[in-house]
Length: 148
Image (cartoon, rainbow, N blue to C red):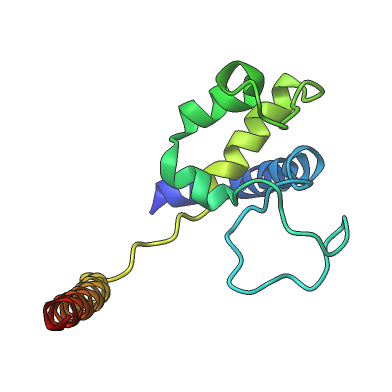
């Protein structure tokens, strides 16, 4: 309990660091990326009603850990020469704030196993139906050719 009271004075500093990271993200990244994958289409953004060019950061965080993401942000053109990301104007202290913010971006939880199995069963049934139709079509074509 005493440890908790020792951490209480740090909460405002942590909150301001989070705000700084969000500000850096907004300034450097939000033109092309969203922090979270939207559940519905946003009504309007700072840059009009266009779709984001890059993936949502929640999707990126599923594929990359923070070290890989830091490498990308430091020099995106070294990782992928065709990228449109430009982080050259970002100061080193902003990098730390941005990484702190991106660490808080929640990664969507995978769907439940039952839902995954239901999708697999549905796909398997569709494949079997298509296969049956193809076999019936081939059978009727071979029957028609035999009658000539």
